[in-house]
View (cartoon, rainbow, N blue to C red):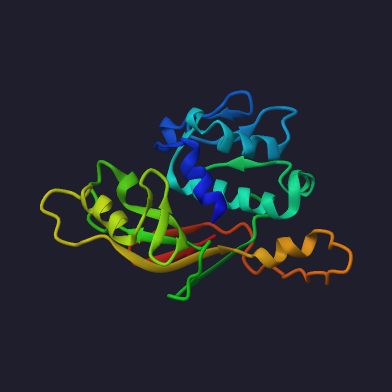
Length: 221
């Protein structure tokens, strides 16, 4: 949650993949919106720069969720372990990097820190970026959506509805798709403090997961 709030305050803006922007001191930016580390740059410094110099960055909401999750991981395990796990860090859309362990299911049992999805079924096909919004749940009916900001579910739905095709009749809505970090995995790889019981690593059942929604079907790869 803290990572999502920090990203909201950073000044990083929403952009389509092709219009993404970055700080060239830390990242190389491809034409398709892929971010790769500059040679010699440590991953934790590159992620930290997004939060410290956010006004130099622009990316779409899928990338924003990945960045938020990465910051949350770094806050748990520290920069040294983070650099080890994400030495070949690449950011591109909703593509989790290697060693980002995600749990995905359908339901309404979401908790703060989970990523939920608002779908806009009648978005204008000329603006596919408005087909939905990935949002981090911050608390009871409070969300962070990159490009929209911190608001309630009605605020996100209203924003999506304002970007529907002409004569649309179906409202945007909150789906039951839930994506969350397997936090126990990351707590399990850090060294315990003296006198504290050591966490037990949780085996990840869905590493490197990509979630794609096409029509009414969910595709995992």
